[in-house]
Image (cartoon, rainbow, N blue to C red; front, side, top):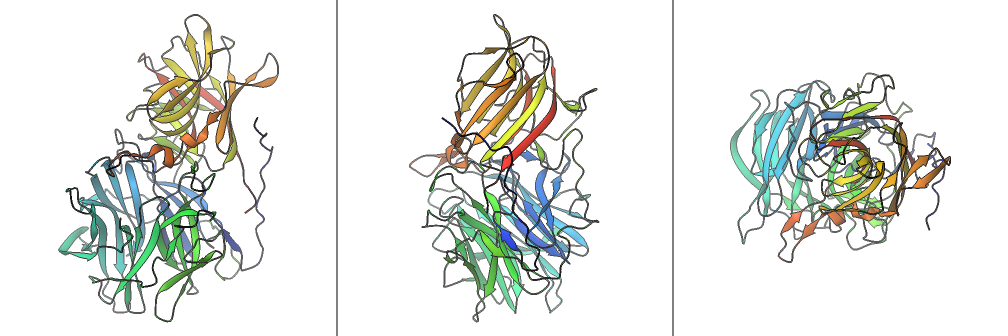
Length: 563
C-alpha cells in the first residue's frame, strides 16, 4: 500500500532580512564535486556530470542562497566526446577559476575506471564568461585525475598559476592514491612548465584526492577530499608557507565529515571548495547525500551543500555545524550583505540544446543533434528517432533530467506507432546503462500495440507484468510516481477515465550509488556508482529503421519537505 503524492509541494519561505538562511542542500539531486568561485559580486558553482551532457553543470548566485541554473559548459563534441565511456566515467571534479579577465575550467574525462587502471584525459579551457564560448581544450598531465588551477595573485604580485592533480598508482603493493602533484601553469603559453612537486600524500584517512589551493595571510592552504566517496568521506586541510610545500595537516583533524554519525541529515560530506565573500567571510561548498534510511540508499545521488567557515587564532579554518564542529548543517547563516537581487541580468545562461525544454535537461553520452533529436512537427514537443537500446554506451536516443525530490511525479504524452517488438518508446527511471526501470510502448505479434514494464538490474533484464494491450492508434499518457524507496508506472486509460497501474511498484533504491557500486573482498571494483537517478524520455529501434516517437506536455513535479 503506498501513500498518494500530494498535488503540490511545500515552498520554502524566503526570509526578507539581510541574514537569510542557506538551506542545504543548495543544489538538490545529482550535483557532486562542487567548485565554488566568486568574481566580484557573483558566485558560480561548477559540478561534475560524468557521462551526461552538456559537461559541467553551472549555477550562479549573488547571495549563496538562491541559485540560478546556467546550463552546461561543455556543449560541443570538440570540447567533450563521451561516446562509449563507461558508466560513471566522463567528467570528474571540474575546477572553475578566474584570471586575466578569463574563466578557466579544468576537468577530467575518464575513459576507464574499473580495476587497477584509470585512463584519464585532463584538459584546460578558457572563456570570457562562465557560459562560454570556451576555447579549444589544452591537454594537461593525465596520470591521475581531479585537476585544479590556483592563480597566485597575492600581495607579492607574482601572478603565477599552478596546476594540481592526484597521481594514480596502479601497481600492486602501492597506495593507488599516490599523492597530490603540483606544477606551474603558464597562462600566456597555455602549458605546463618547470618541475613537478609532490606536495602532499594525505592523512591517515587515506584516498586523498580533489585538491584545491588557496592563499590567506601568508599561508597556502591545500583543501583535499579524503576517506573515499561514501560514508567516510571528509574534507581535510593542510598548509605551507611555500606553494611547493611541504604541507602540514590541521592537527584538529578534518574540516568537515559526516563519518561516525548515521543520524546526520547530510551524509557523505566531503570534496570541498572554499570561497571568501566581499565582506571577508568564508564558506565551504561540499558534496553531500541524503539516504532514505540511516546509511541506506541515496536515490538522489550526491548533492551540493554550503557551510559557514571561521578561522581560529592559529590560522586554521573551522566549520561549526548545528551538530558540532566539523559536522554539516542543514541551515547555515548566509553572508551579511546589502539587499540585492540573488541573480541579475548580464550573466547569460548557456543556450539550451535544440529541442530540449530547459537547462535542467541533459542527454546521455552524445550531444543533441537533429539526426536523432528535433522538435515534433505540429505539436511542438520533442521528437526522438529510435536508435540503440538502454543498455548501450554509445548512441542512445534519450533526454532526461535529474530526480531532485524523493517524492515526485513525472508525466508525458507519447505518440508512437511501433511495427515490431524491437521498436520501443516511453518513460524511463534511469541510473546507468545497467540499472533502469522502463515503461514503454511496443508491438506484440499476438496482442498488437502494448505497454510493457521492464527492469534492468546490473544488466539482468526482466519484465514485471504481462504486456498491457492498448488502443492500436493514438497518443498515450504515461506517468512515473516516486515515493521515496519505491516508484510506480501508470497510464491514463481513456476508456475508464482513470490512471491504471502498469505493473507492481518497483524498488527505487536500485537506482542509487550504493546499489550501482560493486566490489570484491580484495578491494577491487567491477563497477562504480557516482551519479543519481534521472527521469527521462527515450526511444529505441533495434531494426535500424529509426522510427520516431513524439513526446508532448512533459511535466516534472516534486514535493519538498519543509527544510
